[in-house]
Length: 322
Image (tube, rainbow, N blue to C red; front, side):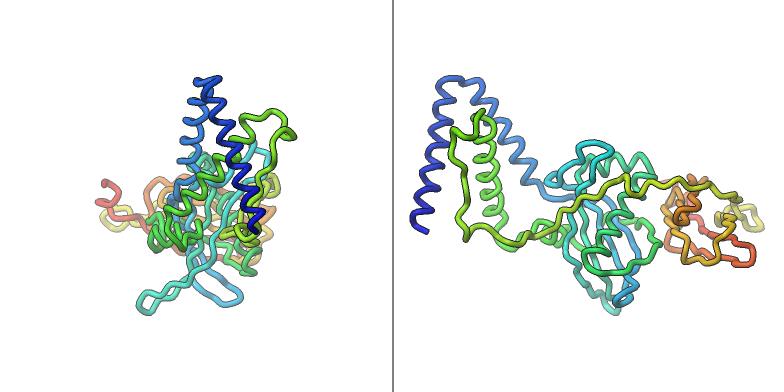
């Protein structure tokens, strides 16, 4: 261990000598290099931020309410292109009790660019949500409900809990930032200032500093795996009013020939849009004419007519005006 530590110290000293030489021979490149490291180090040390929260249910092994916090995090790599896999990170499930309610929270992180692009495209947003749900099922051996809806709040639980879950911070955050800064700087020095890697010794951490397990999983899922051509079903959408002609709710009837059970239907409702999918058969996405109350939304399936009826009460007028 002592010889390993001395070797590491020797290599680090060589790195700093190389930087000193660069500062003397090319001050402009040195300054540019340092500024770039500070910028990238700041981004790498940035904490995940909540983007939106989903509510669904765990069906197996034990039925339970599940909230999925979708977060943006610059430490998650962005996909190289639209056809490349999409990396994501999944935190460990945490059971939380509030009075008589018990539910599970799982935090999932994507690169900010991925979530920002999905905000402008409902199809992409649904794909990212389905990816997250599928990864959760595979990683934790869960069976999740096909239905979900986006809650009005951006995160379930505290932000500090989410950060600790995804980042694995159990000690002083300043220690982690310093460790990350050192790793970034040494790696960048080696890759940015030496054209031939054989001319410079490789930096290896001592074995006792290398963990065999990471705090969170980053998994890559190809977005091309879920692209399936599906038919747009016939539907009827109307606003139902009371006796005073005041709008009360939106009623959507969707004809789904060949479908014999509501369990085959994936329903996603937000305040201003709705998405209905039947695997490899039908897909219907609609912008809603009025804001609806997602928590009061109901759906029923008339088997004899193969028709899905979704009833969505409108939110109060003063909420919409705000």
